[in-house]
Every structure is written in structure tokens, then in C-alpha cells.
Image 1: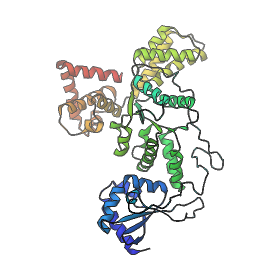
Image 2: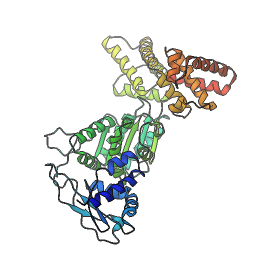
Image 3: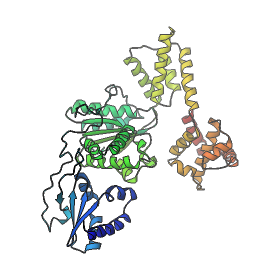
Image 4: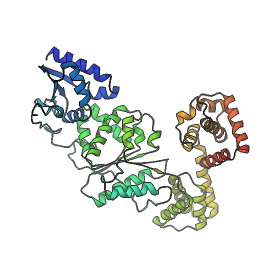
Length: 474
């Protein structure tokens, strides 16, 4: 190998490193090896066709500038794709002139598909040793549109989901990101879209997976040196549904591989559906390039269901279970459990179980006892972190802004309200509250609570803030 080739490439790397993100440099440029230098043409070795295509698509201008700095205006770059097969042997060298040079040199044929020596699809959902290349959807048929009742709180998300199901990859809702709090039906809707697509388009490959399982599969592929197989598998999917995408937070390697898979699917007209417990703007430790792609399509929020929707959900649940219950009992449950659908259905299931197992008639008194347990449990779950999140969302800011040192009036008031509600709904000491809300002392918390009390009496708008937020915690 020519020393000159290495020195030229090292100089190029130094320039490139200064102009891109560290993670991108580590992923896409460190694995490249300089092979030879002939006149003004530098040959570099890359590990796969996918790798080559990604460089050509995303970094060709940067490569051109770096190379011309070293070899002059007539510099050329030759890719050598060298892949490992399943036996660990190397494929023969195959050269490719990048598209930017085609006007001056005719490209040689490139025929090294990812599975060139291994035609079997490596399916990460199949137990090793069992031959099966069929991709099971992992969908739950019980989660469908029929039992996902429409209301004001979910109309946008449900309608968008139906549009995607009717024309996957063919709407502007790609990706479709459904976000909202715990128990509001994100997973149900994601499955419902997939189930509907499978019903309408049985030939399409649909896959549902949680972000946590996706991450585990990726880690396993890195351990076994099958990262390309992992990517190739997901590139074959027509409709990819990833649940709880916020789980990718802080996992740079998984985010990186998902970024490539997402781009491939999107560019080929495939549908991507994501769910998250927060909007893209509130996601922390997710790379900006990924967040920007989440915003390409539609972000639809699932909100807490209103009273009418809660009644409909309960009646639908009872109907499906073949149980009759007086309206006054349904009404009592719907009025008192407001937090989410999961708790709403949990209360009605508990009520049916109490009646069935204990041979008790479903009375209003029994309903009150069951509901009281659920409401108490909900109240116990109110933490200082939760209070900060709710207050931040209400004032349309992130928690970091709420906790910051800024003295802007609306941020100060939001911080004071968070301290006020933390004192009201938790048993934490003033010092503990202050420490968790921006590292303040107990005196600041005490002052915040007094300020909130004073403003509640004198400022009509501020009083409305308190009332609105109070409803979210009770």
C-alpha cells in the first residue's frame, strides 16, 4: 500500500473531521482505508455497497473539496467495495467511480449486493437455527380502528392513521408520529394502522417493534458483526412501526443506524409510523438530524379524552365484554377518572371482577370504592418531575427552560407555579423541591408559594393558570 495514498487520505480526514459531527465522522470515515494513489486518482476501500451509496449521497461534496485540496482540480476518487461473507472471507475487489466523475471516466460495473454470498435473509425475529425468512408483523389484531373510538382528543391522529392505512407511503403523513401521555392509546393506534394495512394490502410487509427491542437487536448485530444484515432486513420493510421512539434517547449508535434505515425507507416510498410520549420539540438526547426527519410528516397528539369520549369508551368496553351496567355507574367512573384510557378501562374491569368474584351487585357504592382506589393511586404518582413536565407543557417550554436562571417574567411564573404545586401535591421538603427545580434553596420555594397565593387574588389570568393546572393534577 502506498505511503503517499495514506498521507493524502489522512490529510483529507483531518479536513473532513473539522467539517462534520464527531459521530458521523466516526461512523462514515474512520472505517475507510486508503489503498493506492495513481497520478491524481485516490482509491479508498469501503466495507459495503450501502456504505458507498451513503457517502455518494451525503458526503460527495465534502469528499470532493477535501481531495481537491490535496490533489488539485483534476482529483478523482475510486471506491473499492470489499465485503466479508458469512465465512469471514473477503469478496473480490470491485471498483466504482463516483457519479461526480462520470463525465470524465466511464464507471465499471458494480455487482456486489449485500447478500452476495449469503442469499438467506437474516431475520432478527427468528430463533437461530430455525430456517424462516417470512417476516411476521408482530401486530396485535385486537388493537383495531373498530375499538379505537373517535373523540375530540384523538380525531386528528385517528384520521391521519386512517389516511395512512388507506394509502401507506402515498400521503404527506410520512412519517406519522403519534405522541401523547401514558395510557392514551398510542400503541393501540399504531397497531390499528398496521392491522388495517395488512387487511387492505396483504402483500405488503408490515412490522411493529418497540424501540427498546429494536435497540436490543442492533446491539446484538454489533456483537455478532452482522450490522449490514440488520440494516438490510429493515430496508425490506414496506411499513415500519416503531413504538416509544423516545427510548432511543442517548443511544447514539442505535440512532445512527435508525437514521440510515429511515432514509432508505422514506426515499423508496415506504411508510414509517412512530409513537412517542412527547413531541419532537421536547425530545432530549435525540440527534438533530433525526428530529428533523420526525418533523417531515405529521406529528399528531393524543390528548386526555373528554367526558363524552370517556363514556363512549366505557360503554364500548362493556358491550364488547357482554356486560350490562347502569348509566349512573358508567357516569360516575367517567367523571372521576380523567387521567387516561388505561386507568378508565382498568377501573371498569376491576368493577366487573369485584362483582363477579365476590358475588356482589354492581352498585354506585361499589363503583365509588373502586374509583376511589384508582384516584388515590393516581395522586400518589404525582412527582416533582411530573409536575415540572406538566407545567412546562402548559406554558409551551421545555423543563430545562423552566429550571434555568433566566428572569423572564413568564418563565419565572411557570417556575413558581411548579414549586407551588410541588408543595401542594408532594410530601417533599421545601429544600428538596428547590433542589429539584433548578437547584434553588428553600427560601426561594417559600417566596414562590407566597407569590402564587398573592397573584391568585389579584391577577385574573394567573388565577386561570392555577385552575387549569390544578385540574391536571386532580
